[in-house]
Length: 109
Image 1 (cartoon, rainbow, N blue to C red):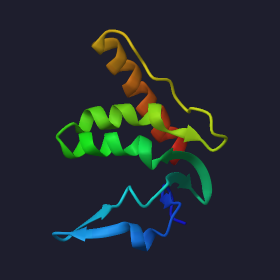
Image 2: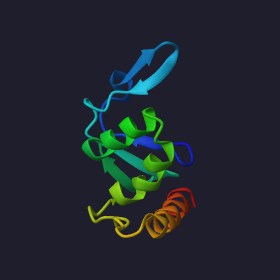
Image 3: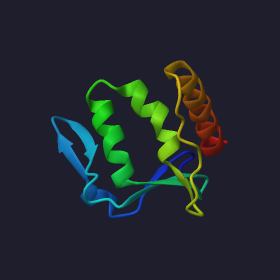
């Protein structure tokens, strides 16, 4: 398994479709995506939690999708890895950005 590789919990080959020369994951046939590094599973996200993020990403909401990813991932024990933030948009954005950095560090280190 490569460093920082994402592991798909269902048959990976059947869940990827080709669309105009690009690969796209079929989130309706995958139950869970596991974020792993060096063979160690670190986090997971259920496809039902990932669908709104991918829809936003495809609809020009890339920053929103990335900033909201940490609040949707879970540790392998099933507990939430990060909090969902509420309040003023600037404060929420700051906390989400910090969570994203921490998520990436924990996943890739």
